Length: 258
Ligand SMILES: Nc1ncnc2c1ncn2[C@@H]1O[C@H](COP(=O)(O)OP(=O)(O)O)[C@@H](O)[C@H]1O
Ligand SMILES: [Mg+2]
Image (cartoon, rainbow, N blue to C red; front, top):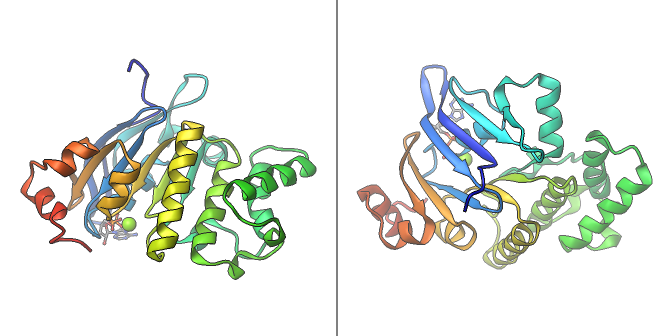
């Protein structure tokens, strides 16, 4: 594979006051590839995801995004306006808590259409028809289009977040525990959907999960985090079948499952 990474992070550290959220984290994501970040609760996964997706400015290090034209952008060096536009159009972020990623005060259809309109789409009719198309693709019935998200189940909320993010055709999406807190059967269906969409659209993704089964199902490569640092990384199946670090061995034997 001779392709260049769509995202690279070099020695990223994030401090919360004097406390470290993540330390010296480097990563690369290639087109069409899903990279999983795993580790216990509090190990720094969400912090890394926010830093590499341009939402949290790191205390040190650099994040580079390679856009559709092959232009390399210093994510945290962009103007505020350019960074926000990039977040609304070329990148997607599926939050662990759907309330952080959706506008609960407007309809489901508006949640999807709004992202297109705020990303530069001028035609309301076109935005609405694309929104409908995406609600179909995530298996939300058309007669639920005008409902507020507050009326949706947990699984539907995550599917709605996915539709809202994918409607602009991003090249890279960030998923923070997308199936956390869902029933097993709902989780299984959602994982299938994410896998199908990612493969079909050749999306690159960074997936945060504490669930190694989710990482195994969705990701090609994996990084294990502990206390803010990456302690082991590699091809997902290899790391999970033959973990080298004692901490990863504990995780895999699910002694540390949280
Ligand atoms: N906004 C914040 N202010 C202060 N500390 C934080 C904040 N967010 C996270 N932390 C701390 O940073 C560490 C990493 O947190 P986080 O990235 O949320 O971990 P994970 O997603 O793996 O559970 C934890 O010790 C957490 O308590
Ligand atoms: Mg987290």
